[in-house]
Image (tube, rainbow, N blue to C red; front, side, top):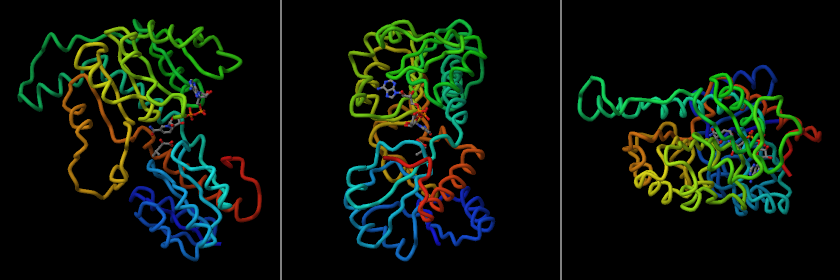
Amino acid sequence: MKFIVYNVRDDEIPFVQKWGKDHGVEVAYTTTTLNQETVEEANGFDGISCLQTIPYSQELFESMKSMGIKYLSLRNVGVDNIDLAAAKENDVQITNVPAYSPQSIAEFAVMMALYLSRKVGYMQKQLDQNHQFHFSPYFMGRLMSEQTVGIIGTGRIGQEAIKLFKGLGSNVIAYDKYPQKTTNGQFVYVNDIEELLTQSDIISIHMPATEDNYHQFNHEVFEKMKDTALLINTARGSIVKTDDLLFALQSGEIAGAGIDTIENESADLQDSRSTKQVTDPDVIKLSMMPNVLITPHSAFHTSEAVRNMIDISLSNLVSLNNGDKPKDLVD
Ligand code: NAD
Ligand code: COI
């Protein structure tokens, strides 16, 4: 049995090496992004571990089939970028890692909410752009205990976020298309999404990207939100229409945004050795706003998450190779 890990970052390599040694399995790695051409590097391997936000296309699965590679093990949660029908047609089995560390993403969402609520962006701007270091009326923030937080998606990450916001004293309301049976007295489900949009001071999105929530946060929705509201998106970029977000921030329809995931993420995003400067005009515009915190899809990135992503994805490849049905099979 031998595997290859694509899109590897330097911080993942020690975990890959340790897993290989502990399990007596040969594991190669490459910084290359996986596509129908680069899959050639996987020739002779029994399975691929991968982590990327750009599409896994029909052509990739056709190439995998022609090379006799049957297993693709994702190191991440989201499966929105995979042509699942093409994978099935080409007999490629896929696994993901549904819970490598939900706390990592939840904590990041809370960090974004605190950064925006306490106006840290304004403080940074004063120092970075004007080289000044003094009080300002723009720095007056709001306590988390005075705010209503609306969580959209009460799955693994959403539930961790609820615990953290509750710990800070916030009033938490939530919406989920498929609500949990119990809320443990921690939050209240609203009757419909409209209620969450109009009542929340902070909205944090924790649902997967699907066809039905594509651009769900658009001009119409921003108009319904409080003009003092903050939007946090650590889920997927496609859920928020960036043009409309920019307008909402510029026109004062909402007060701020924490954006870890933005639509149309390119392969460059994951090139952790890159020295290229950012060219995406939306990222540049958002990065210049003091009421915005924009980060390169890095909410996941803690040592606990990285270890679990590697260990679980490689163990899933072993299960697939042994003909077992891994619990993380994506169908
Ligand atoms: P999960 O499956 O445990 O929970 C998702 C919840 O969303 C479920 O309760 C589901 O019922 C609900 N949901 C689905 N569609 C919905 C809709 N249209 N409206 C409202 N609710 C809906 O998933 P999770 O582990 O909590 O992860 C959520 C998402 O976070 C992932 O799908 C992924 O896109 C994203 N994510 C981002 C990062 C990052 O680094 N930024 C890391 C991991 C995951
Ligand atoms: C996920 O796990 O779904 C993420 O968004 C993390 C990312 C590195 C792909």
